[in-house]
Length: 204
Image (tube, rainbow, N blue to C red; front, top):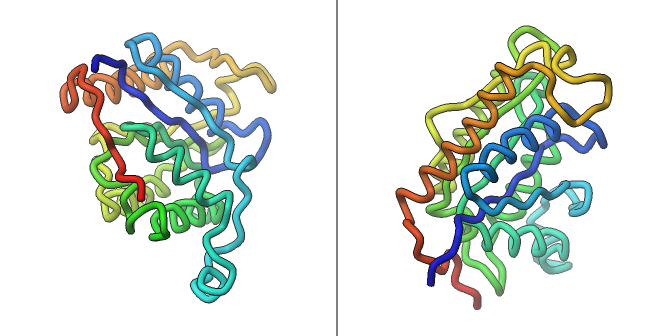
């Protein structure tokens, strides 16, 4: 069955108007212009407790974590933007990934990640653009079986690239780079899967 490539986009920041949310939405537009079907989610809509194996065994699998798993299962590609917290990922993003990687009566261990493709990016008001967190994010995703695109973007001095709280990036060069990253994810998915709809997860 012919169908467009589906991409899920999200950011690791919980702030309402975070720069990482704004840059991932910029990359989204590039994927959409290339022909992808892209859906953005906010991790604030999936609040999860800090993962604790004892709580998991006693209370069962967290409902919001299961909702997040189901969403990940539906998409072949991910656009992920993470802020840099102390040279690494923020706790909310790592915790969401930890929960989603766990097995339950619906999904096997790591099933919702394995074989997927991701493009990653970060942003910071600093000159380095938060780049130190990307190596950590790449490593985590790779261990889970996600194919992370070699190209990645760190947007330095990001506060100068938007007009206040606006969503539209005003720096045309960086805007083009982000849109091209989104388009590259679409192109990679198309090369891997063509126009054939594949079942990506096995529901139990």
